[in-house]
Image 1: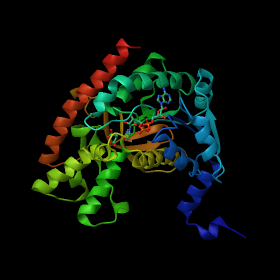
Image 2: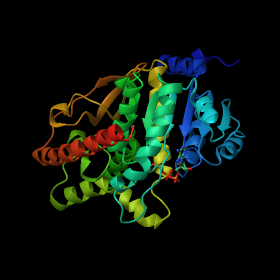
Image 3: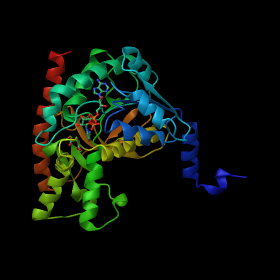
Image 4: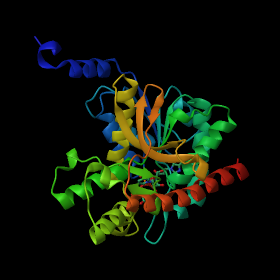
Length: 339
Ligand code: NAD
Ligand code: LMR
């Protein structure tokens, strides 16, 4: 007879019973897209998810029918692109993940997506503020540096803003930073966890290699930092007009959602870098900033400071903070003019 006590250690038993208790609805808005589909697949494989709600302006019921055949316990439903469909997809959600919006083509910056994606995210945020005001909202749609402040303003306008439950997903920067250093140092990437702070575009992405004990120098360091800051461009160029990172992003989004669920289900010391309402650089115009954040049942548990960094990293950080303040200001100004 199977006995958890004999097979698992105490920590694993706690994790096992926590996941067995799990009753978590996760909603994906933009579920039929390049990110949305593999993200939905990965969420279907996660035993902590009990209900998966898929919404898109096209094809969500089809994606749900497909993913729903996978033999894991969670239920999957695809919703029609109507107000009622969006309402029902959101109602009761513990986590709402938003990858809805257009991706870059070669030659574009993430900020070039602003005009299209700002209104998509604003409208979805309005629905979330009404139908899932207590959910954790995970914004993937670019430009994250501006779409997160837009979401915050929408929630404020409905009187339901909770800064502990709004997250810009920057996990892909950490995934890349960890993979790229493992390629240089020939280490196991699974054991690398490079801290990345700032925001999610170009110079606002600041990898803090020194905190992991590495000391690349000169051109090698410049090349590493550039690759982390512009890793997204590598994929955009390689896809040659067909979009940007989708598969690695799906993995990164699923990892972040899993961390939130683990923390909500009682696991301690769950730390992920993420772009949140943060006190760290508010005095320099950055109401939002990505740094390591401890997650808990209430969302953000503790925002870690940037910590000890080198002079080289300080210079990167100074540039990042300047750019980020502009991106945040742009999002807030736009949504105030276009409520
Ligand atoms: P995609 O075009 O393949 O998919 C986007 C999906 O959003 C489509 O299925 C579309 O129908 C849907 N959509 C559009 N408007 C919608 C609305 N109002 N409601 C619901 N669904 C809607 O694009 P993609 O490759 O999946 O990328 C999506 C976004 O994610 C882009 O903005 C991209 O820049 C961003 N992105 C962010 C990161 C990150 O690290 N945060 C990484 C990669 C991509
Ligand atoms: C990424 O980092 O891959 C995403 O933000 C998509 C992009 O436009 O590069």
